[in-house]
Length: 166
Image 1 (cartoon, one colour):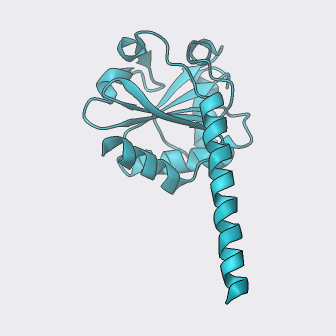
Image 2 (cartoon, one colour; image 1 turned 180 degrees about the vertical axis):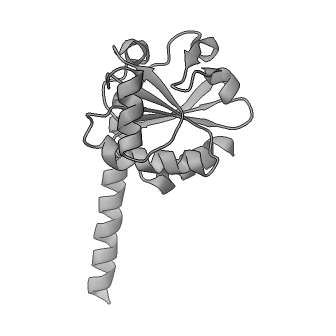
């Protein structure tokens, strides 16, 4: 029994240390939303004009910054596409992944469907000071409420959206 308690304590300590490191890294790598970003009109691959303020008014919006060349994104992008397919409020931004046709072909090749704003030269990423892919930003009512970088699970994204709405 004493051995089990010691293991439980060590696991709890490990989880706390890991959580602290993750929080610190997210804080240090957090993107900086540009002034008046909420009103900026963005064009998706399908030609729709969207604004982050408008998309985030009714429920929190997950903005997913990714790249076709990003190794970690290959594990995160299918989860984001699943969120979009199940009706969650999602918008993705493809960073320096080619022109609109190349991004669309890449998505089709992976059998992924999600709303995408193409950022072929990285101008939008530079405005947001995105330094790491993937980066996930949660916006609610036109304001950034959460962000994280690196791999995030489907349930981690669902939890972040739920938390932002609560």
